[in-house]
Length: 109
Image (cartoon, rainbow, N blue to C red; front, side, top):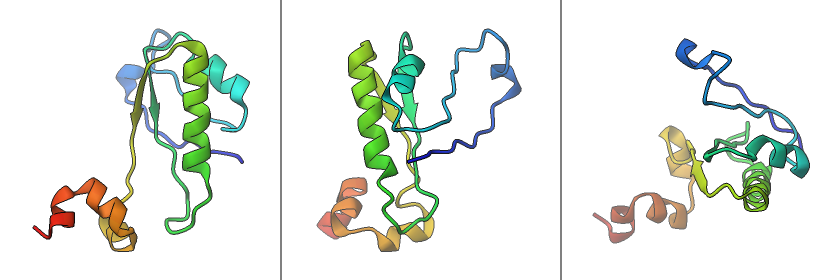
């Protein structure tokens, strides 16, 4: 499984002493992920599939690998960012996801 990372970094973060470290590569290479997260205060996970309605497994497998690497290296903070449920994708979500993202939806409010 190969992941690709597309990102825009503000110029203020583009110095040699930047506090932001980016990883782009194969999410199945656990040792590489460990080396990437080792010594960090937190990890931001923004994994997503290119095809909106297909389950490539990259989110589940990748997040699992990141958490395993974090446990192995003692990193305790994980921030997960997703666009799931934004725009037209909302209509394709199962009830459970809609209720999780918006509890009022489950109550019919």
